[in-house]
Image 1: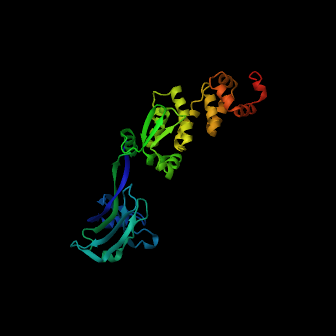
Image 2: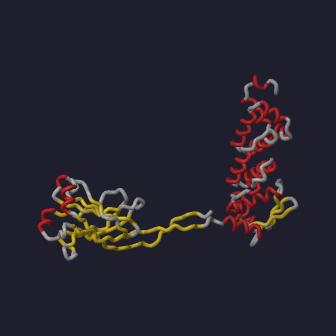
Image 3: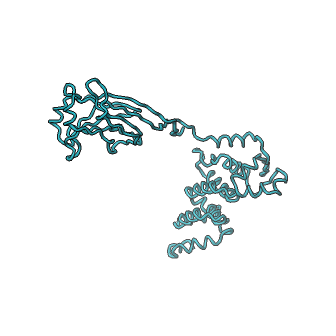
Length: 351
């Protein structure tokens, strides 16, 4: 699935002028109390909705003799919109009256924030002049918007893992050959060194760099090494992730891969395999998993096995499994530890 990202675009600037008429000046002054308002018809600038808010009898009690006019941002989803504006009373000829004009420098508007700085007009002075034509107060509002707008773009997810998988599959520029059993695997020295501290120490030392490019791997099955290489190049383990492979085979493979990941210190693969084994403990596999955990120091897996074996029926079934003899011969101390954690009365039949 593509990722949705926001990409900053260039600064957007827009300037527009609007003429707003507030009819019934005398009626609004008579009916509305101090602090009550009339809201103009909304207008749009910069893709945002704006209004002018008109208080015929002022906002505060101490200013009841003044008209207050504010520019207000109405768009619900607007944040941090920068705007400058001019509010001006128009005379009977449609010209701005300089003494009844207010220019506000660039400021930031957000929905729900305080209003802008107002245009204040003394009602007595206004009414003494001839700027109220047909009992209508006419205002011009010039608004300039400057903001950085962002646009949404669908950015495809990374495909680096696919490129590296193709590099492994096609063997392009491979400079190493691993012999594992009867099979050979081509690989790239720099990729292995980048993914494994053990490979880095072995492959990038002066001695190894000048040595032959064929390396023999002992004590590992070819299919395990193949899966190890695949993870190194792609960070995925298909052999453990396939929905059709949920039986005992993938648990066995998880055990082999866990040992291989520990051998080459590939931390993420160790975590994946240990999680797989912890979630698939049964009486047939628990002895093998416990021996693996004890020999390699996988504490979480060991604890999960010991909890499973705390049940006498599970312990008895483990003793009858094929892996028990290996556990007893290779890790006798872990059996003593298990018995020490169980109440003796519960284990009379077992002993």
